[in-house]
Image (tube, rainbow, N blue to C red):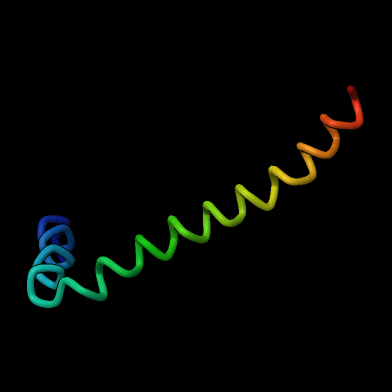
Length: 51
């Protein structure tokens, strides 16, 4: 399959049914923020002990 068609196919699927395509990036951003927040807790406690 030519690379142009590989680039156009996801865009066409997004236009045809946009709702599931919006949910996936939102889910990944949410998971990333959750992991980032969980990593901040131990760092904050270590910084507090240094004071």
